[in-house]
Length: 291
Image (cartoon, rainbow, N blue to C red; front, side, top):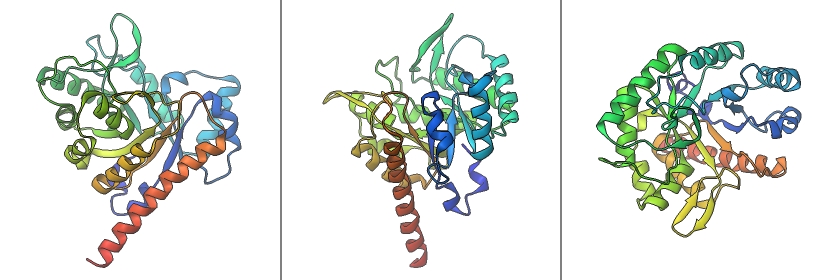
């Protein structure tokens, strides 16, 4: 996400709504009129070295919109050596496309090979020190501050503390930012029996530089699956509204990875994001005016 210090004096500059750059959406994204979305987020691993029609499409979109990088395979919490060659390739990719923002997941996804899933870390002091050191090294190689995202998880490794305490400790020790996935907060809250509003109340407010929202699947009343394949549910919109109250308006990404609806439906969901952002900015302006 963009450097929060550059726009903190003018919160409206953080009122940005974006979409994930997916190949299935390329035609719609290229044809979109100005104003449908403000930025695009992509997984750099999926675009490194891509040429041909897709490469040309990426170049044209990069000329029209800010691009944010959201990594999938760095495995910040893994025990295998950090993939510094990949990071150097990503740094060149970011420079080539004028990308200033990079985020990754607070998880691991490799052992002897890629596991193709984002797996949860143990919530321990040892894990805090381990992943924070790898984040600091990542920032050194990329030569930029990064954000890490709280992830959804279904198994619980050792937990000497709760999730939000662990997340706060990692971003503090690593001196990085937090990309707050509101849907993941809700999914984990239901699956692991905690209060999502309490989680938001306890997140370190100065670290949040962006939000993700997405749809999930209701497997059961007490089991939610983070799919990114459905519309955002009303309870998640409500949590985004609470996050605005706590952390202010920040660039917000609507995640959709499969089961794509007509493009107009995605634009309508972006409209919900814009509406919540405008509501927060109006409320804060009124509070200042009457303060």
